[in-house]
Length: 319
Image (cartoon, rainbow, N blue to C red; front, side):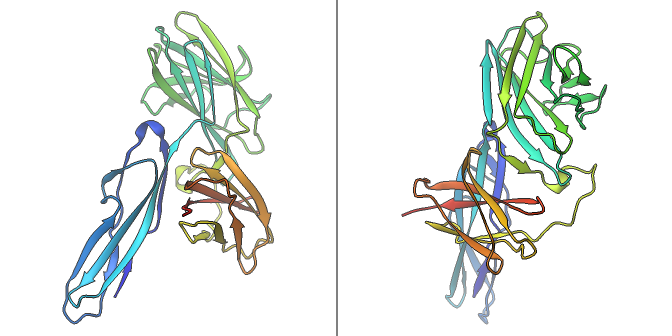
């Protein structure tokens, strides 16, 4: 008798959306018992469609046939609550750099949350652009529709109060603790170390600060999330084992065409913990995890000499 669980599942979501509903396929079991019929029983974790908490949850199933044979399997559901890379508070305004993602054409997309605790509504927010650079998205004089559904007129580039991309609401938008997420994309080879950001309210009050980008890991954007550039054929994904691990993590990277692989490990908050570079032996190598790393969910990112990045999650579970 045999049973096959679905692959591990990993989500990176806004911390405000935790817990999150997760749907998964039930394991597939087969048996050579002459009496047909199987019983599938969940022995650990949550059912498909349940709300899963932040962190790693192990889900296990056991199948039993009418001959009394059993087989079990487990998989992991990892929920990484998206934590800001940098946060600045000035007066009643709060600014959060949520993430930086890169696509196969090496464009970098920045997501910034603006929280307005002031009584007066936000009139516009301007975010610094590198000198002479124009964001590829959104376009100049276009209308940006935020995740909230609110719309903002875009000026890209904008000259004052500094060289920037500006998001302006026609009627005033957020106030009283409401938030908005602004997003824009810079062309390849553009990676500012910090971003000046400023907001003007409908009362003409002015708030300005800066966000650091150097503590923000650059995540690979799924190919399906963009359709305005040509992409290369996806490479064979790498595999981690054992997972969970208690000390040493083996990486079967399937990148025999690359002579050297750079790797780095982030915790669930996106903080870089350790990094290195190795030449795979037969397509695989191992990483000895630092003794100070606590049990929990982590992310391994590897990059070949061609600059292509891939990322997967693993669980550290020392006894």
